[in-house]
Length: 206
Image (tube, rainbow, N blue to C red; front, side):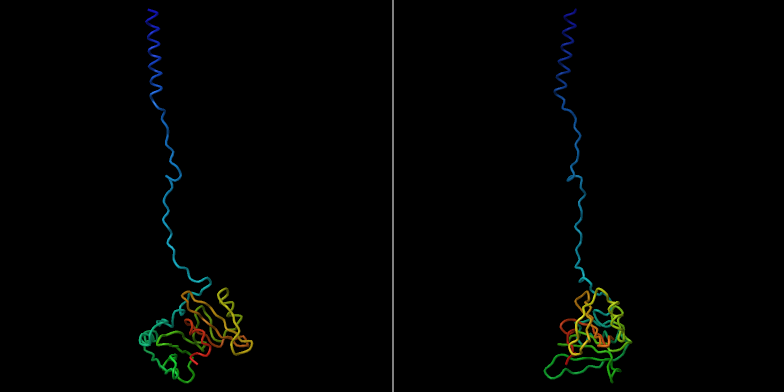
């Protein structure tokens, strides 16, 4: 009887040992950082405007007009802007392709002019304090006031012909420029907005 009991115990022990070797221990799978990371959509990249550039109405044209328009499209846009005010075209000098157009009722000493070259609208010039420049500048404003208004956005250069006078240039976001002429007395006498190279014609079409 003792021998039978001992044999039974040995048999059970061998069976338990066999089970412990055949069953692999359970392991918990831990996701790696690469597997759990949420995909990040690529950010859309837009072309940023030039640093310090001025974004304001009037930097792309006057009213409904736009730089680059031919004379016919400009005239249509001008009528829409002024509700029917006429426009007066001038003829280019012999051998030249640059000329100005003016409001039809502004004949004696035009205070507003539109430059065309090769048949395309390229710039407008203002010589009156009744018009406000993009960003707020005006004819008659002092140089100190002007520089404070366009702080961080302007470049100053000496005037080409007048001693102690200067030009204040403000770059636009779309490649256009705003240029103020400042007298030796420190007062804005006129300003213009346009594209290159016409914006830098100091004597207009002259």
